[in-house]
Image 1 (cartoon, rainbow, N blue to C red):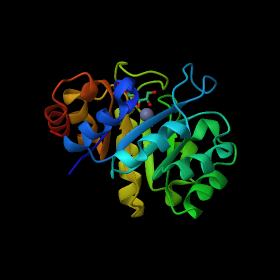
Image 2: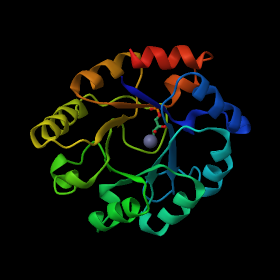
Image 3: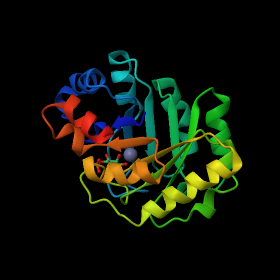
Image 4: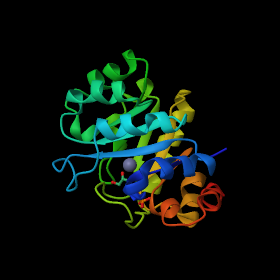
Amino acid sequence: MTKIAPSILSADFSKLAQEVKDVEQGGADYIHIDVMDGHFVPNITMGPIVVEAIRPVTSLPFDVHLMIENPDRYIDDFINAGADIISVHAEACIHLHRTIHRIKTRGLKAGVVLNPATPVEWIIEILPDVDLVLLMTVNPGFGGQKFIPNVLKKIRHVHELRKENGWNFEIEVDGGINEETAKFCVEAGADVLVAGSAVYRSKNRRQAINKIRG
Ligand code: DX5
Ligand code: ZN
């Protein structure tokens, strides 16, 4: 079954614990946590303190999406705060192999992320080592943006490579995912759908999650 990872970026931060519990009760599979530093992307969000604060609230895996420069510097902090999966942007890592293995040797799942304009060729050598490939379907930085359909080709490409090589990472998509775009992504080979506004802007989170799951 397709997994749904609600992004708390679109949650009401004044009652974050309740917002996390709400999507857990609504059937979410992961909690997607968007970390932005104002350098790699033009927005600033949350750090390890927030991750630590909501850790006791749910037993769902924390899917931490680092949109930061020099992610190596902060990996340990996010691990200690309670992350389960940490994904880093290929565009932000000069020593991607080292960074991925730094995450894995601590016993976590490691993901690699590509911006919409970055080709799959950038990560081909690391694909055998990762647990997750996150394909951005918007330019990272903000919730509520429009899905970029051209990324569907890339989802198909990664899906084909996984099949041909017998790899078993999950394929995740992030940005502009709603009931309609979710369908295209799943058809193309996505296993995990991140959804921020489509889940949190809807009153009935369970219903929203079910609709996106299709
Ligand atoms: C974008 C973030 C996304 C964002 C998705 O930079 O990585 O996770 O929260 O939000 P929606 O689903 O509203 O596009
Ligand atoms: Zn994200």
